[in-house]
Image 1 (cartoon, rainbow, N blue to C red):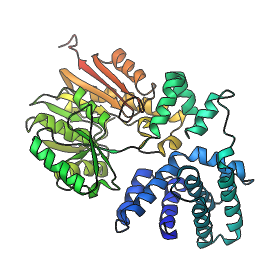
Image 2 (image 1 turned 90 degrees about the vertical axis):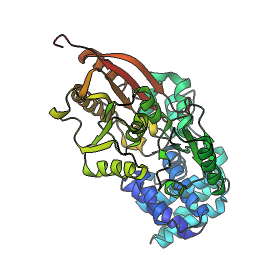
Image 3 (image 1 turned 30 degrees about the vertical axis):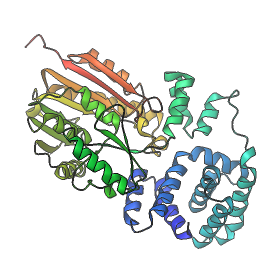
Length: 438
């Protein structure tokens, strides 16, 4: 790979790691901007970008083992060059260590840090020579430190998961979050066998590997793609990008033809579109979110797919809408959460969230649940879901609904990464009871 490719990678990682911009958004923008590059070059950028973020704690541990100046004291450009180069040395057999070292030094010089080229070269050469003999934290001495460094997960999350799930399940989840994450899509359920076969043949011709899910007949995994926008049929709305767990949420809602469905935190609209599909052209879905931008994402998706039974509205889900009281057969409340279940797709989440955030988010969720539960008709369904695996945001809020709102629990499901073939999700279906005044 050329220095230019690595320079693009460096700039991208600086945006994510130093300026704290969202990794999935920055990466998509970069891949779209450099769509003219060869597929292997864009795959190289994507692989090292995602890998450096995913393994950041372990990479910093290794760098700090061989550098007197620790990563938190380094200049941002040098720190990022060392991180992306160390990732190549530690995790990419296809890249010769010498190339990773040499290109790292060239980048440092090109970015105006020629006086530090000896430092960069020395650290990287040391890692290369000694990578098989690095002393990682001892599992027996501290299981928390061992898991944190081995799987690059902040210590507080390790401690929480060990408490909630135990050592074996925690390590299984940690392994699962570092596995390759194919793009998951939903194709229309009404597609005929012939149409489905024609679509699969087109994928094969484009060099895209397609694997059918064992869970849902309309769910497929796509491999060997850099950008979903390049996949045949995307712009024509022939499929929707949606995780398996998100599909399970809509399945659990038990939507019937003719229902009125209210999706209160809907962007970018995967569940909204799925709900509209379940209605088969009948009923109505109203999709809401807090800003014009978020609602524009929903609108863009349903216009691309051609659904006519969807309406959108900009609305803060924590604020009561008097016009919506007792109006919906189904309210889908897939609420803002810490996102710990989707770390496998958005690796920077684990560095953004703090223990204090969880309590704040859980309070916000309860406020929203209290508000949106009033939109459910008597006998209707409240479907509460999150893409996290924190009990504070999930089971504790389930108990809040049961203790403070007129609902009974009919079904709940927890999907754990590494154990289920999906991101981490929590979902629960509640039925609204009659109150004494009705």
